[in-house]
Image 1 (spheres, helix red, strand yellow):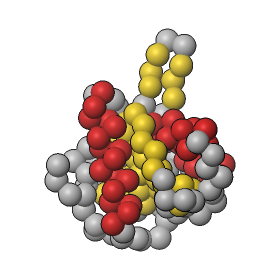
Image 2 (tube, helix red, strand yellow):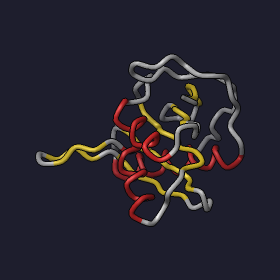
Image 3 (cartoon, helix red, strand yellow):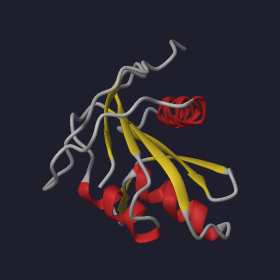
Length: 132
């Protein structure tokens, strides 16, 4: 797998203005790698990963069933909460879209108002980071 780019950039989120420019830390790069893996394992539209207040990581892929549709980021957050997380340090989404979905963004913000959410292309290239 190629390493995700650490180039600083921002990504729009539905209804939000792109936030400040940031660079990926080694731990945030790991989130992108985990999200890519979750997406690739099942050929999902999106993959996501989050890191909780204790440094534990949770990865997930988007799910689309007749009775259930959930974004990868929502599922990663749900997994973290189900394991006892009360705060998130950061999140990452790997997607073919150029923006962060509103539902995933809202799920992260339910736990943490300021955790960076990195948006990356399927090849791991950082498209941007949402801080708000």
